[in-house]
Every structure is written in structure tokens, then in C-alpha cells.
View (tube, rainbow, N blue to C red):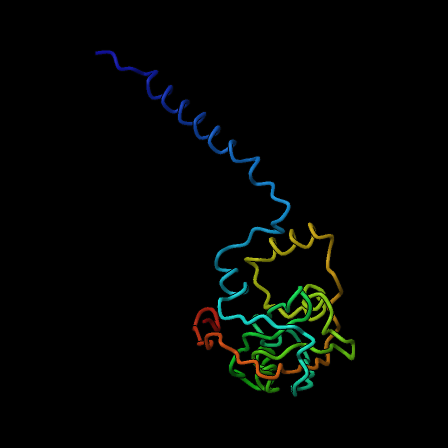
Length: 198
């Protein structure tokens, strides 16, 4: 009895060309100049805007706060929110404890930094009307995460590099509060694997 030897080969070839034309058909839609970098949903959940974020104008940050000297990075502030028009930066999520004496991720907590406080100055330089991206580059307050290092490098390359160089530690940061502002975000809880999460 003769077996059709050519039939599986033809089926595989048709599947390959069908998949290639399917994948190739989306190549034009990927070029989107308004999207600076593609990041994962987990990254957006962790660092992106939240429904509970309340818009603020950095000029309204006239209330009492604190002057904090951060000796090393990261400071223990997991997320910042830009002000209206992309000006200013508000500390949003602060790790709620110091795990051991000298814990860099406990510096903000130990200094009494509160969610909703605005970065007023860095080493004496006024930050209330600076671009959010420049403030973030100067603070460079990120926990090193190898999962995002490549996407961060690509996004920096696309925008033409950093907007400012990171300030050398130790650095002095003045935070001001916004009178009447109430932080409405979720409290951070400890997670044995990932540190702290919402």
C-alpha cells in the first residue's frame, strides 16, 4: 500500500508560509512614534499611574515636609507621580519599614517621608518646576531589576539619553507637603519573594 509521502511535507510548507505572512502583516503597525517603549503589564502595574492618583500642581507644595539626606540608592520610594503638565514629582509609595540598620530601602521611611510629599529641591536646586523625567534622572532612585534593564536602555537611547545625570550620593532632598492632600493609594504589604507590593 503506497503512503502519501508528499502530503505531510506540503502541509508543513503551507503552515510555515501562512504563519510567515500572518507575522509579517503586523510589521507596519508596530512603528508608533507616540509610544516611547514597550513595557510589560507587570511594570505598568508596579510603576505606572494608578486610579487613586490625585492630580497636583507642584506650585501648591507649600506645606511642611522634611529635608532628607540619602546616603545611597535606592531610597525606598517605589513610585513617583508627575505633576500637572509633567512638572514636579510626588513620592507615592514608600517601603513602610527599615529591615536592618543602614537599610538603603528603609531610608525614606526612617526619615519620615510621607506618600504625597513633593520633591522641592535636590542639593539646593529647585525642582518644583522641573520636568518629571529630569527629576527622575537626577534621583536615579530605582531598584536594579535585570528584567527591565534592556527596555530602559532602549527607551533612553530613543529619547536621546538621560535628561540629567544622577546626582552623586549622598544627596540632600527637600520634600514639601501639599496642604489638604490626602494619599488614597493602597498600603504596601510585604511579599517574601518580591519585597513589597500593593
